[in-house]
Image 1: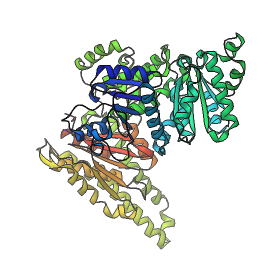
Image 2: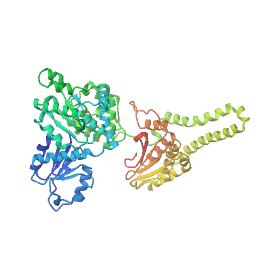
Image 3: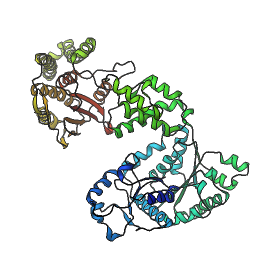
Amino acid sequence: MASVFVIDASASVRETLRIVLGHEHDVAVGSSLDEVAGGPTPDVVVLGLPALPRDDRSLGATLARRAPDAPILLLHGPNEVDVHALVPPHVPVDFLPKPFDAYGVRARVRALLAARLATPVSADIVEAQRRFLEFPFLPQSAATIVRRAMTADVPVILLQGERGTGAAAVARALHVVRGRRGAFLAFDAARLARGEIERQVVAADTGDVATVYLTNLDLAKEDVQDDVLQLVETATARRSRSIRLIAGARNDLGDLAAAGRFLPELAYVVTTLPVLLTPLRDRPADIAALAETVTRDLCARLRLEQVTYSPAALERLRRYLWFGNIAEFESVLTRTLALHQSSVIDADQLVFLAEDAPRAMAARTSAPARPALPDASLAGLDLEVLLGELAHELRNPMVTIKTFVQHLDSVLGDPDVRARFAELTADAIGRMDGLLENLLDFSRFRAPAPQPIDVQAILDRAIGEHAEELERRHVTVERNGVGVGPVDADEAQVMFALRSLCRGLVSDLVSHTPIKIRGSGPGVVEIEVRTEASTAARLSAWVEPRANGGVAETPPLTWVLAAALLGRNGGALKVSKGNAGTTVIRVDWTRGAG
């Protein structure tokens, strides 16, 4: 169902429009936009402006933030409103001055929805919707049938499942992903009257492909079933009509037809391609994959770093009987992540019931903070981990030297091989010498002497030292974002840390890709890069703890040193996966390590 906001100072207007529009749409009402701030982004806003004097530009800014690009139905005449101050030119606006009638407001809202959906859908939106048609949102069997439905020319697709199994999301995704630019019309078949479907389809027809989604088809009255059958037959016979029908039902239509409570002809047509939305309690094997997919989206929405679940938490999620299916599952994970904001969620942190939220919040504020990042000092690393990483850094150049020594006899007789031998050996020795010198420099640092410093300028200097190497690899540097501002830290120690970070990064960058440096607010700068797969895996492993609390791999030693010095200076080094296989390195002074 489309989401509609009704904003008006009159409680009577709000309640009337809630009733008039509520059977077709998900309606939220309030005397101002702030009153519906916790709801979804609306598809349409029905707006009654406050009396003059008022600030239309300020209201327009609120609309742009709370209801970006949503069409507006103003309960005023065109001469009463400064539309240019209220909404940008691309946003559809219609007028319906008070007093209005129920049929008029329904028709205007449907027309605005059709105009919104007639706009070409961006590739990003298509990809975001596609996840509702794939595993793990759908069971594997259902996802397979949906893939067939994407290309099959069948009159009806049936989505059969319990409440909360995601039928509405699947229906809308089918409309978007199949390239529909016409209206998406959702009706509750149990509430329809005879002839109402055809009237509303005709009223909303934009000439493009339209999708009619009928929920509760199994509860429709017999005369409404006749209307649906006629709509299917018309759409099949007149292909230029471009109507696609998606039906939702909770009960088996074949069983209802056998019992004489459903038209057999309609049952046969509707069950041509049934998609069974299995209850989540019957999909325990899919819980881990579903949790990962849902959490990835939640982290983006809640602005969290990557979050994982302990084995005990996943087992508890598997054993729970999900009464509300996927809808309840998403609600539980959203509530849990919003309250705890931990990098690893344990079983006792899962907040299944809304009434448990205050208890969970109280426990979180009274419990000691759990570190979400690696310890910022070398003392926090196990000695064997540090020695193992040092051995790893020394082993490769030692192998190079050892190999050439073993073939020294053959090397001496060939001038070209001798030159190559000298070059590679000098490089290997230089790597070891640089590593040891780096460790000696690190050991000389003592307590920081903080002063205001420009982190972005220091980072630019550190990257600039590798300009020749970046040019050789055809790697460009792109800078954008907001200002980071000064932070209090020891300039020499921060310079060493960022030099170490860049030194470990540049050698593993993929050629012909950019380094993106962006300021993300006071005290935060991010570096987004595409590295070789092995390096990306090591850096990801650093921030993806295993169930036993350890890490699968350690980061490069240069990164360990950088993290240690940044932590000593009140900052933190964070690593996360970016879009399209990139890695995002975040230098952050907002939370500090000390």
